[in-house]
Length: 214
Image 1: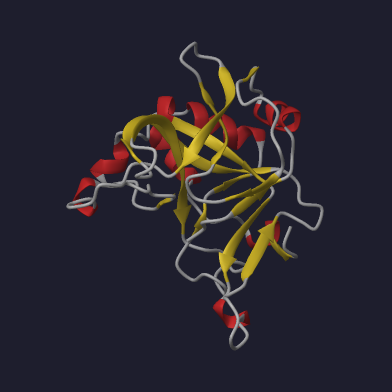
Image 2: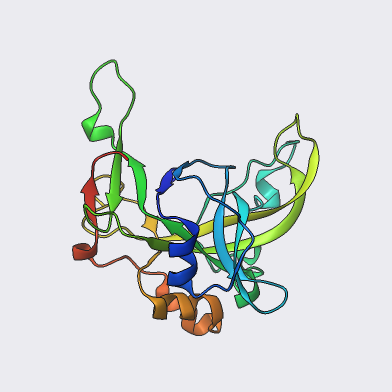
């Protein structure tokens, strides 16, 4: 399960790739993104215009997993799109794309005795061009951290699918749903679910490679 990724491209590159017309994220510092971090997403705003915004990584947890808990840390990866919990956010108004240049998966096979499990990092190439995760977002009121108390915030997560032959040796259960073209972004952000759901598939093996840690 991907719980760490990196973004090194700036807002202008993201705006141009996604054809977004508004930047509500401001200046963005490049760096690694961890669960519950605030990070950039591209979505269709309330005015119908595509916008670059910021949201916190981790969608609302299904209620059955929150019984007796006061804090909802959120769900970062979404696999079962047929679940009623997730279906409510699969329409175009709640879809987003998440800009990425590398993502990580824990690599137990490379762990040295007495040391922490290292991460394997994946990118489109050694040049680490911009790509996107297929995501969903919502505005939600919850307690993310006890010290914060109840807050209302924009939250996001991205969909996963079965791994391709590059990711599977490291993480055999899943990989993020990756979008690499303007046409795929158009489909994800605007098409009916019956069409958009076809994008929940592994990336072709030749489009991904293992790289050094950013």
